[in-house]
Structure formats: structure tokens, C-alpha cells
Image (cartoon, rainbow, N blue to C red; front, side, top):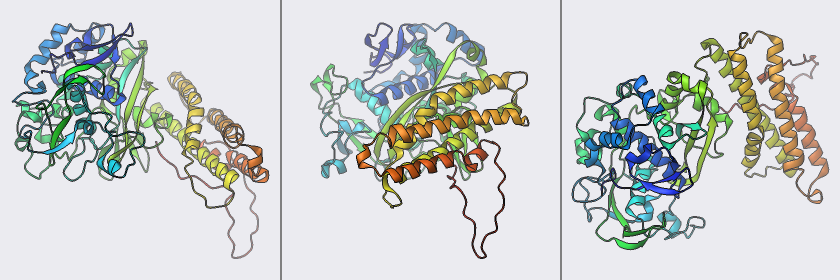
Length: 557
């Protein structure tokens, strides 16, 4: 079964019909999106197809790229691009197999049930302790070859820690992925092609383009010893630049010797070749060094740049600045993903005539355990046409608004705890307060961001020396924070509880304290609002005056 000719990709057409297509059919204009039964599969298939296009495209300059964006190539053209690498996409058989270890035999590794390919499957520890409450064991007993291929690629791309010698993915366990998509959707082809760069430019950005032997792109075509010595590491210079789309940290071999007929437990379709198990061994490719995957933002850690990973709490506008424009602060610096930066800088003509969004997704992992799958889209505003000095001012304003929001959340969370528990040291998870605040202020953030971008492009630009402009801008966001915090406290959180089960005095004190803090100097200082001068008061010898409010340590996006 060759995956370049097989109809194995689930897609949704404009009519709502779910269909299965071969890779070269993605150019059909009525195909809107991937339509797998699992969200992580859809994210993985998008990455696979972008990687396939980037690996094979002969397009070397932006003008040729534009021609294919305006008028998609034919399916025959794509089939021609893919034909030279067909040997790397055989899923079964006696030769090399897609994403499977070249030297592993059916009896040469530890046997695993097929559901272990799924990142969210119940692990052995959960089964032994009988704690598989939400993701039950043995719900996936048989997987068709199509779903098995998708699961295999999804695991290799997102591989979490898997025990001694079972490597994480090239970007670590559960990386964050950010891609450009059009809104409204034009077609699946357009969304994929937006994330492909001219080949000449891509080959200059890492790896060794002289390593043209296919094994340096598709590591399953030979023993991994051809790339990495036993117990060694795999650095970018040891591979071709395209390798990062096809990284293979896990040594896996699907077992096609014991297939059976039946319904696939993932896609629910009938298959004559349901897979029930696979073999695996440790010591796969150990990715180290300066890998820069074009789909992930990177953050500075001491002297290294590391890929960003989803964290508890999900995604919100607090991440917009870092993941779209990048972030540079004293304690943290973030660079946007390569495909995002390239699009904003080099494809400005499309940003003037169309709307685009940032598609963000990934697993929030706790070592081996997935805590949650997060996925959303953000509006993708460009600043490439704005003067560089104005860009810097704009980024500082956005950063200060996010910092002010974090400060307001700190006040709200503390007041909720005080209202409910008083001065006790009772602990609990109040992260829902944070999420409620971010969600309640999101529309206002993007509305005001759009206004700021309009101002930045105006003749006057953004003048931070204009006191009236700075004050008006700060007051506008301050009003949003105050109104949202008081409403959440008084109506949605504390006020939503039964009066008979609350302490009215404690609630009133917490509310008044929240109000004082929201109008206090700390929040105003962050937003560059005027602060009333304080009259110095004589203090008793040996005693220090206490600050009026506590200040939340700044948490960057």
C-alpha cells in the first residue's frame, strides 16, 4: 500500500460530504478541510501535507508561488511532484516502510497494542492502577491501515516521553503548532500552500542541502546508524533540511502478519486488514542541537532557543503578541514560527485584499500524560507596512495591556479566595477565574488592537510623547479591566452563589478591596496613567510603611 496513490486522507467537501482522497487530490477546489474523527489527526495531516509539498515543490521564487496560489496546479502536476519519493511512502511490504524502523523485525521488539499509537491512550500505569476513568482501555482494538498511518505520523510528530530510550519528537513532547489559514475558507489547497515557501529559500535555513541521498530526508529508508551512531545524537547538519518534516524519534513496526476483517475503531469504516498490534524498540533518533521547525514559535532559554509547548489554561489573546509578532522582554523573548514571520513579511499583497488567521493547536503534556488538546484560531494582523519605530511602540503597548490584564486577574483571583475562604490558607484550583477573565476581555482586546493598528498607519502614527493620547489609550483598556473584574466577582463567580452559604461581611470586604486595587497605582502605572502624588506621613521609628497594594509578578505571554 503506497500512501501517495492510496485514497486515505479524510476530507470535507463544500457540500458537507466526507470523502477520502489521495494526496495529489488536495488541489480539488471543493475540498475545504481535513475531516478525521480526531482533532490531533487533522492537525497532523495538515503538517504532513505541508511537509510533502515543501519537500517536493520545484517552485523557487515568490512570483511562481503566487501563480499557484491564484490558480491551483492540477492533480497530475502534484502527482508528478510526488512520484520521485514514492518509495518512502510504502506502508507495508518487505522493504522500507513509511515512518517505521528499517531494521526492526516482527519479532525483534516489544509488542504493543495498536491503541498505544494514540497519544491519549491509557498507559500501562493507568491500567494497572485502574485509573483509566475518562479514556477507557480497549476501546481501540483494531485500526485500519489508513488510520494506523495517520496515528503513526501523529505520534512521531508529537512524541511525548515514552520511557528510557523512547525519544520525544524533534520539537519535544507535544509541541505547539501555528499555521496560516484563510478566512473564510477558500479551499484546503490554499490553506496548505500558504505555509509553503519557495524551495530555494527553505533550503538555506538549516540542515545540509548537499545530503541529497533520500535516507537523510526519510530516515526509515535505511538503518538509523546511517544517520546517528549508537547512543549518539542527531544534529541538523547530519540531515537534509527537509528531514525535520519526517523526523522519526520512535522505532516502530506495524504488524501486518495478524490482520483481520472488521470495523475500524477510529474511522468506523469496514476494513479487511485491521491492525491490532505493533512492535517497538528504544534508541531511535535522538534529536539535539539547533533545530528550528517552521511551524513552531521558539522562546529563549539561557543561550538556546526552544520550541514553545501548550500549557494549562489553553490559548488566548495573551499569546497573540508572542506568537504573531514575537516578544522581547527582560525575562522572556519569543520568536514567531517561521511560516508566520515569512507570511507577514513577504506576502503583504494578500493581507491587503484578504483576511487570514493563525491556526494554533497542540497537546498540553505532563511528561508522558496528555492533560488536554488545545486548538483555536487568532486574527492575523500584519504590521509589515508600519514604520519599524512605530512597530516597536505598538508591541510595547500590547505587552503592557497583557501585563495589566495579568495584574487585574491577580487581584480578582485573590478577592474571590478572600470572599470564599477569608484569611485561611486553604488552597484550591482557581484557574477558572483566570480563564473567565481572559475570555470576557478578548473581544475588547481585538477591537482595540484593530483601532491601534489603524492609528499606527495614520499620518500621526503612535506618539507616546503625546500625553493626551497615552492617557486616553490607557483609560480605555483600564475601563475594560475594571468592568470585567467587578462583573465576574459580583455576578458570575461570588455573586452567583447562594447568599445563605456566604459570609456577607467577608464578601463586601473582598469586593471593596478588589475595587481599591483596580483603581490603585500599580495598575495605573502599567498603563501609564496619572498617579496621584502621595503625601509623606511620619512613621514611627523602626517601622516601615506597608505598600497599599500587592503587585502581581509579571507573567509574560
